[in-house]
Amino acid sequence: MYQITPFHRIVSFILIACILQSCSYYKFRTIPEGADTEYVNNRIAKRPAHKNYFIVHKGDKAWQLKDVVFVNDTLTGTITAMNPTVKEYMNKAYAGSKKRVPREDLTYINQVHVFIDSLDESSKNVAFTAEDIDRLDLMNMNRGLKIITVASAVIVTTFTALVVLLLIACSCPHTYVYDGEKYYFNNTLFTGATSENLERDDYKIMPDYFSNSGNYEFFIRNDEEEQQFTNMLELIVVQHNENAEISMDQQGKIYSLEELVRPSEVHDNSGNVLTDLVSYADDAGHYFDNKGEEDYNNVYASFEKPEDTQNAKVVLNVKNHQWGGLVFNEFSKLFGKHHDLWAKSNQKKSKEEIRENIKKAGFLLTVSVKKNGEWIELEDLDLIGDVNYNSIVIPLDSDLLTDESIELRVQSGFMFWDLDRINMDFSAPSNLSVQRLSPSSALGSNNNDDTEALASNDDKYMSHLTTGDSTTVKFEGIENIEGMNRTIFLHSKGYYLPQKQFSGKLQRKELAKINIEAGLSIFSRGLYQDYFGNLTLNTEQ
Image (cartoon, rainbow, N blue to C red; front, side, top):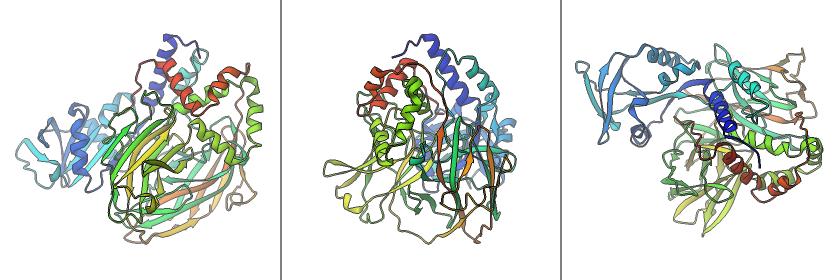
C-alpha cells in the first residue's frame, strides 16, 4: 500500500504523541451520587496509586495522602503536606478555571479528591471504604480542549515531506468559548456536511461558565482550507432540577435523564472486556481498535431489563477519533488531480445516497438492539467531530425489548469513533423549561453583520470564505429560574466546501479495493498496521 520505513513510523508516532500531549487542559468532574462507590471499587482501585495524587477533604480542610493502598475495598494512607503544585492546580480548578497544562506538569493534574465527614485529624493514618465517601471528584486532562501549539506546527512543517500529515483538526466551523480568562476551542458544527446537498442541523452542548448571566457569547472561526456557510444559529437553554442530566437526540428532542443505568457487561468482538471503561462519562474511551479479523469493530453491551420499558433510551457519550482525519486524507489522495471531479460528482447525488455510501464505508456509528436472536438497527450517528465527547440519546421502542435482557451493539469502522460511555435510561419525561434564542448580534472579522442571516432557517447564510474568517455571536435575554440548574445547547445548520488540492495520478486499483462493504474500515486497519505495526497507541491515563 505504502512504502513506509521504520523511520516514518517513529516520526509519525512522535508527531501524534507531541500533538496529543503538548496542548492539554485539565478539569474536575464530580462522580454522580450513588455511582461513587462503584467507581472507586471498579476504576480508581485498579489504577496505580503512584500515578495519582490522593487528596482527602473534611469541611474546608484538605490533606494529601501518601503510601496509598487498596486492601479489601479499603483505602489506607498517611496524611502529609500537600504538594504546592498539586494545590495550585486544585485551587485553580475549583475556582472554575480551565487552564492549559505544560507538559512538565501533566503528572500533577492526576488528582483524586475524596470528601468524608469522619476523619481523625490528630492521627496521621487514615482508612476508609468507598461507602464512607460523601463526594468524589476527579481531575485529569480534558482532551477535548486542544490547540496546535507553535512547537507542534513547526514539527509538522518540518516533516511534511517525510510523513503523511495527521489531520487532528476537524474540518467544519470551530466554536471558541470564553471561560473568564481566555477563549478555547470547544466544539465543531455540522461535521461531515461537505456539500450543499448535505446541509444539516447539528446540536452541541455548550459550557456554561457564568450560570447566573443572562447573556452568552462565543465566536466561530474558519480554521481550515474550506468555505463555510452557516444558515442559522439558535441557543437552547434548558432549566431543570439538579438531579437530571439533560441530553438530546439527533433530531434535537430534549430528554431529562434521571435514572441512568450502567451495563452489566460490555465486550468487543475480540472478547476484550470493556465494562469498566465505557460505563462512565470520564473522558477515557474505547477507540474501536481491536485487531480482530472482522471488517467492522463492534461493542456489545448487556443491560438488565426493568419491568417498565416504556421510556427506554440508549445514552452514548461519543466523538470521532482523530485517526479518521488521517484515513480520509489518505483516501482523498488516491484520486490525485481528479479529486475535485470526484467531489463535484458527489454534490449531484442525493443526501440519502451519500449517507448510505458513508455508512457502507464504515464512517457512521450504527447502534442496534437484539430481538429474537437478530440485530435490528436503531440509528446511524452522523459524524460529530473529534474535539469533545457529546451525549446522544437514542429512543428505544419497548416493542423491541421482548428478550429477557437488553443487548445492544455499537458498530464502527476501525478507529473512526471514540466511545466514552454507554448507558440506558428508563425515567419518564419531567417538566423542563426550554428557552430558544436567536443571536442578538453576530459581527464578523470583516465588519460583516450576520445577525439577520443567522436568525432563521432560510436562504440567507453567514459565509466564511477564507481561513481565519470569524464572527463573534452574542445572545441576550436568558431567563434564569431560581432553584433550578440550566444546560445550554447550540443548534446550528449549514455546510462547508473543502478547498484542499491534491495532485498525482488516479489510483484505480487501490480505490477499487476500498469500494466494497466496510472498505474504508479495512483501509484504515491496513494503514494503521503500515504505520505502527504492533505498536499500541494508548493515550488513556
